[in-house]
Amino acid sequence: QVPLVESGGGSVQAGGSLRLSCVASGYASSSVCMGWFRQSPGKGREGVAIIAAGGGSTYYADSVKGRFIISQDKDENTVYLQMNSLQVEDTAMYYCAGTLRYCGGFSGLSGWVQSVDYRGQGTQVTVSS
Image (cartoon, rainbow, N blue to C red; front, side, top):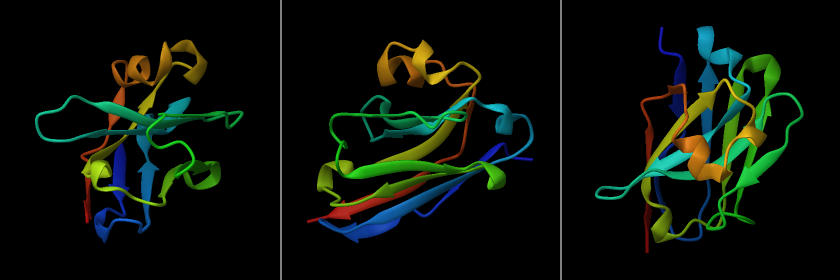
């Protein structure tokens, strides 16, 4: 059973919107800090947004702040990423991931990305001009 399964990626024109979903199952549903990171060819992982499973505190990368919204449905073990005003620079493979440490225990999103315990297989987001 795949612990994290993403969906919702696709192709969209700049200025458009997409909503990504991530369903956690098995041991991955025990993650206390869930979120999304992205990776483009030739680039490293970039943390996009994370959300605390309990209190719902959220953290965003400066590059997406004001455009993306992360949310969760605890009953459905699902995390969402609403992406608005998409830009060509947002083109990447988006991965859902979770950690067993609390969101506040990392040195920023980069620290969280380096510490993920579970991740999905990714969903491609392509934004054209």
